[in-house]
Length: 536
Image 1 (cartoon, rainbow, N blue to C red):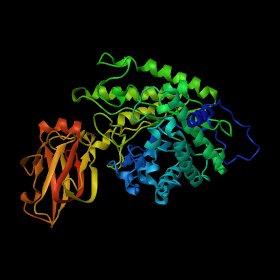
Image 2: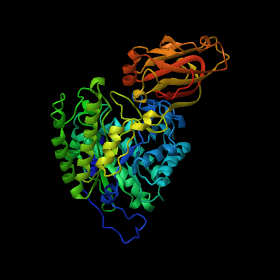
Image 3: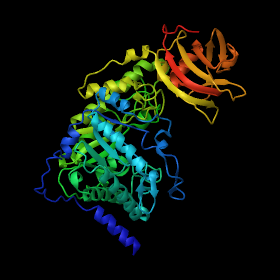
Image 4: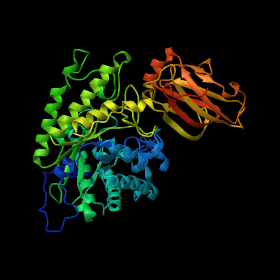
């Protein structure tokens, strides 16, 4: 009997699209339909690895080990989001921001699913900043592992009930907001970390989540009755959406969009580098994926347009991009190829009326998962100009030359934190910060002595932790570590100007560097290009 009931729920969720006739109620405050909302977006950006961060999900016991605090925003190593960060993104030409948010780890009462008011206030603060800066905003639920990993009938009813309680609170908090704010119901629903093609059960359960989201938001009334809502295909894989996705029933017409994600081929765009080149235009330089090239992108996006946009839905590529990756000896050509990759995908999306939000996780440098476009640890300097310039050009926006920023001093850290090996501060500096570094450049590090410590030590290792660089301080060589008190005697404050030998520069630029230590307080770290140092 229970199985029949669950199958009935899945059948209802999979019902054909049905929209009630638009009433005569005044909708002047929410006049933008899905095609207009998505069509107005020129450049969309993701605030990745920020408000969606959490670390305490226990899937075996199906619960969060503890309620997250506001500190969860920085738990994956990124700094707290500020309005100034968003301002820098806006000034680069972006006019829409997707804000991934984890809500489940901030529930203070599992029965009512009450969200911590402090967390709700923090999310609202970031949304408000974004709207004040002129962004369109897409707010979602993200990394809700209790839901995203369990697209199965045994969890369907309980998950739908929980999802409804969460979205009722979010929708009521933002009920009076205007049409610039849209909601996205879920994220990459799949099966326990597996990304294979779904069964009928998996798609039916995912469709039911979408229906619950739409029903819940509409029921809160006010501006939410006409707000643009975004629903997802299984695992946000567009190919699965072409066969299993069912458009939810909605009370109003033309206010729904479908979201998919696009990192293809993954071993070029994500788990780089199997392929250092992409596209038939670059096959003479090295191996490329024949399965995912320019022709495939054109064919894919045309199919998505026909399946969804032509039938009244908005279409949103909620995440896309490619990790910055290159071989040192072929860096210029491979970065040129990344430019071509970004430009091609953005142009084809635009031709097919697909709004795009590039993924930015603030991981900067060279290798897999390096999607950082702006460096939030360095006053929002541009860490991946090839990606940004390509998006600007393809979107018809001014293309800004960011190359000269590397010739200026770059503050990568400013604060007051204790270095105490595993318990204290560990600073990671991406390889992009050393792009123009030479043997005459310096890394300036300012430290305060910890009077309670029995010794002091400052240690450097490459970002992969496999080796240490050869450094030069005041004319003396050091292998990856130094005791500041032994250079010029014990002091309250030390300012070190650290150079790197030729043999270390290539690895420094490719892998970046990690700074840690003991008995010291870190105050400032500044990358100083050649010709800008006048100290030791």
